[in-house]
Amino acid sequence: MDTVIQQPHKLRGTITPPGDKSISHRSAIFNALAQGTSHISNYGTGADVQSTLKVLRALGARIKKTDGLINIVGGELKEPSNLLYTGNSGTTTRLMAGVLSGQKFLSIMSGDKSIRMRPMARIVDPLREMGASIEGRQGGRLCPLVFKQSNLHGIEYDMPIPSAQVKSALLLAALYADGPTIIHQPALSRDHTELMFRAMGINVSEHGLSLNIEPGQLNAIDVNVPADISSAAYWIVAAICHSNAKITIQNVGINPTRTGILDALEMMGASINIENKRLEGGELVGDIIAESSELNSAVIEGDLIPRLIDEIPILSLAACFAKGTTIIRDAEELRIKESDRIFTMQSELSRLGALVQETKDGLIITGGKLLKGSNHQTYSDHRIAMTMGIAGLLASGQTYVQDADAASISYPTFWEDLESLKVA
Ligand code: S3P
Image 1 (tube, rainbow, N blue to C red):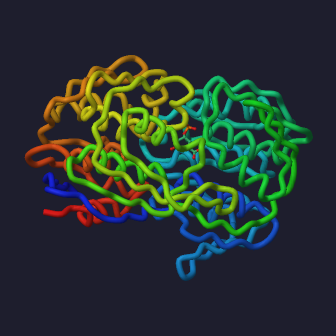
Image 2 (cartoon, rainbow, N blue to C red; image 1 turned 180 degrees about the horizontal axis):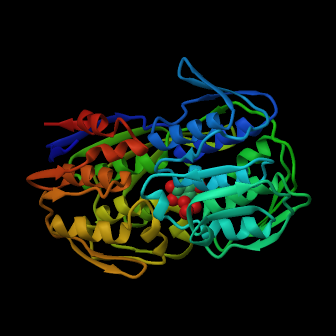
């Protein structure tokens, strides 16, 4: 599907984005392995989190959907009769690699074209150190990956990159090890696995940036998944960059390891308020109200990067509306996401007329140039599709987005929600 967007006079309304992708994946995987029965409400609707359910079912997990709830009867996984297909989902692939490493059967896992290009050595190397028997294309650097029966032992591992997917794969494998595993992180990445593991009875302790986990059996828990802050970020940027806008985004997960985008935008002068802050199942949740703001440039770098890694495409669009030059650096991880997001954002923002320069590990963006809609590609990357949708609300003229359906990887109702905010 291609779509065309035109700037509205006003943006007003209330949106509840789909359930958080990271928490949804974890709630399904952990409960499928757990002892007991669980109910998950507001499970994400995007294709990625459906890929996780399909993979778990192919492993014999008993998962049913009724009345908008996901019901899981936890237990032992079984040898799959076919290849496990993870679609476009890096989180499914990497987290399941941790699970499959600990199983007493053979399994083969692969995904779509993008997944087959994404680096797997980051998980394969430490999992092999734990004793996992993994083969794969290019010596295990690329999918398909093959997991054979093995016995895992605890290791002490210094993570070279601050990745929650790597950390979670190791924490999952650590459940099957014969002793404790210690993980040292270079910076804090999202901690949903640690929080959910603790709630499910696993002994995971934190000492600064280091984690110590004991092997153990997960106990099933019900999870009420909050709305995804990574999806909320599109509406926040739409509101703060449009000259006549006020948007409320409800029931958003505001776990501090995920709120780098709020910190960055507030640093740039954005008017963002959070109301009704509450704790739900160990995760902080709130309603976010964002409105038209005057933005200034900022330097986005260092430890802030893992806290807003998925929001950098939309943040780079916001930088086009800020006074001065915004520098985003230390973000080379963007080059190996669903697309090379440094290249793709440089290319699409330039097409809008923005002043943007690509660097090895980020972008340099000088705000203030008037943006004009053009013909845009999504590179089959959901976050690029949605960023270009928001660009269409903010740029003059018509903004054409080819392959707009890519948004459905995380946010199938994105284009309907966008229309609902427009006031002619
Ligand atoms: C995720 C971690 C991040 C993020 C991805 C989801 C997770 O990836 O980009 O969308 O749920 O653990 P990395 O761990 O590779 O940075």
